[in-house]
Length: 281
Image 1 (cartoon, rainbow, N blue to C red):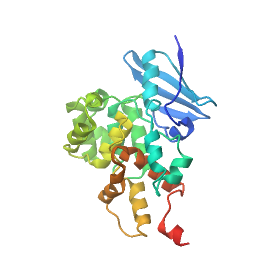
Image 2 (image 1 turned 45 degrees about the vertical axis):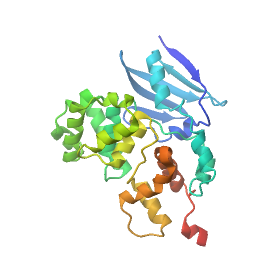
Image 3 (image 1 turned 30 degrees about the horizontal axis):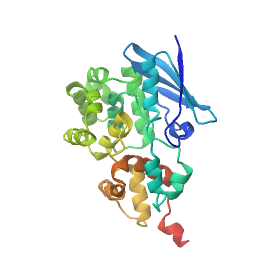
């Protein structure tokens, strides 16, 4: 049986913006259609989503659980209008928020997948990280969203052979074996952050990825993200910037630090963040 449901997003929403970089080993986005493998209690099912001209998001799945999983993944219910209002008075994000107001942070379907992404992405380019992530998912879960059980059953040496740094591979396997990752969904963000920061191999950036993409939380910013490091350097007119210094950039955004990270990176990449050199010119 196939189910289809229509959802009216809360606040401005653009599937094209939200899913534009969603492609990975478990999903693809082409011609306005998002096709994804989604885990449910009955197994993995294929779920599709698209947006109508009136803004309604349509989701087709094999079960109600599949529909709800995709709705969470697309962040349809997470109104970010207060954040957009705040950006109206923010010189760094004013133009980005105006042009990208429908952008939300798309999520992955398991916390284990978010943790894998966080560990793959440390200290390397996004392209390299996605290649490693794709290889791991292809070998470990045959293209389905990875679970903690699947990743915890892999020997760290095998992950190392797939390109993941040995220390990060060991941390990933250990955490998947020792922590109930899905239970993090019911904990307050502060408790999640404190718990993960106690783990060897996880820093603020990795925690931000887990919170944003795995748990759908906006409070933790992507401290140390390479895009933000480059932005801070550009705002200062050049020079060396430590990853930790990006925390100062995100601190004013408070509970929206995670989403602010996404908008700052997007805006900087599209030349929408005003920089000193441009103002001088």
